[in-house]
Length: 329
Image (tube, rainbow, N blue to C red; front, side, top):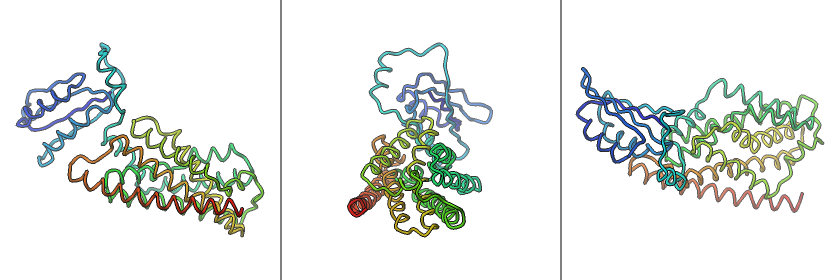
């Protein structure tokens, strides 16, 4: 459940009351105007049900100064809410977090920070050691700390909203993180002893169509988790599975003087990046993630079509490269 709290000038009280009645929250209360001429609305909704009311309130107040909407999670209410018809409707409805909640979560992944680079560097070092020593536990540990979920999902979410600013920021983060990982692993491969016959390392040069299925599942699970407002920590590990090991492997092989293996690992990395983003975009579209205003929705739909077409084209090229490599490998 979610608690929506809105504070606004009293002249909008009647109109917002009508919006609330149409939204049919579990419980709501509108305060009388205070000494400053301001009213406060408090309404409790099931998760994801407040989007229409939130959009209506924002559209009504967007040209007004001094208003605020706050959304808070509700752990429990008493007495227990029991409505069999409402429960049946909830089971039939797509569960989705509020757009503003999702944006708040994913936008953090589009911010450059020292922590992002430090975690990327540390996870690359740990992954490189795990790959070189054939230690799967160490590789998994690297994926736990890898901060790659944020920028990747932020990129797909921004494309779903047609938010060019967020697209550029998240792309910058994703490319910076992957570039740092590859560059650091090149140095490790060139100046430190690496067992290039390690199974964990050589397996990142094996190209097959199963890699496409893994990356699609990773991206879809990540987007589904975030759009439903569920914890994304474990899904972040799954995304890191698709991105971090092949990036580290490509760098290690390149630093160790094996460009052919490096290219194969780089192809696997490219396939994973494309598939994760394509699956995430598809999930956001299925969940109905879209901007608030009609004009923004039209622009976002065009951006989604272009973005999806580019990803599908790239996936077709990479699939061809996989098929060719598997025949010659």
